[in-house]
Length: 301
Ligand code: ADP
Ligand code: MG
Image (cartoon, rainbow, N blue to C red; front, top):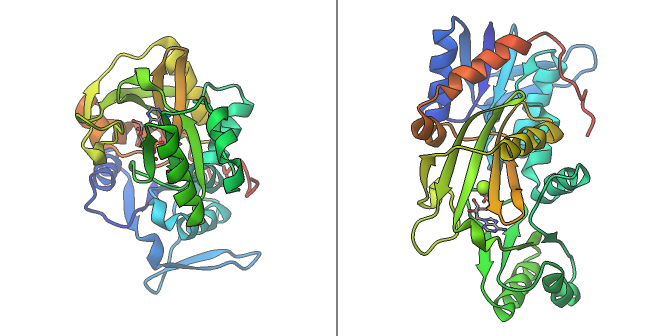
């Protein structure tokens, strides 16, 4: 197969591991910087150009689109889809997963356990919003934040009010969420491929921090997950329409609560913590499914 790997930097661990795994399994792979792609969106002959060349002949595409380039990145991916190239994750599913509120609404509709979450537009509604999620302490999140940036723990009602007011004053979209204290600064990252959790790790926040993101100094270790956690992770990925996903779960008194579903999960932490060849399993999944014109949603939301 000829595989396109959409990534801005071939030196990143995840990118280089995917390239390595694809070559090992006998495929041809080209790393493509999405920002250097330009496209022709003509009806009958959609085309994609790169550095003066026509990009053709690809069987599959692996999107690794950074949060800061979601808009252009998904447009490029859509172009691949129009050309009949099989995407391991579809553009529509990636767009969904990048909006935390939209994701939670989709998951809630299907009965997935979530932390109680509120959203409001007007500062007048702040007191009721805080009450709705059970009062302080509570977590305030920017809708499009990532790697723990834009996630704040407000310990008191006063602190919560001022932080929410400040974000609203900046016209930032935020949601307000019940703080799951019993998770103890830890969460479980489940790496889902297809209909299976292929690897799972526990991430523990460093001392004095509640965010477990590895980018925020969290540490990863191997963890055994329960059947309920396994089922929740697989269902969450499937509801989002993602074939490859990192599903983050908080262990609460009321069972597993899904915090978010990532469409470009980092491979370093999970491969190092579990010793598993996750990149190889992603390539296997492509081998299993890649057929021309297999994008399921056909551009629908
Ligand atoms: P990001 O997309 O920036 O990673 P998350 O929603 O995943 O944002 O939050 C970052 C981290 O903060 C999580 O990994 C988790 O450790 C902690 N966290 C987030 N929401 C809650 C919550 N409601 N209760 C307890 N901890 C939380
Ligand atoms: Mg996260």
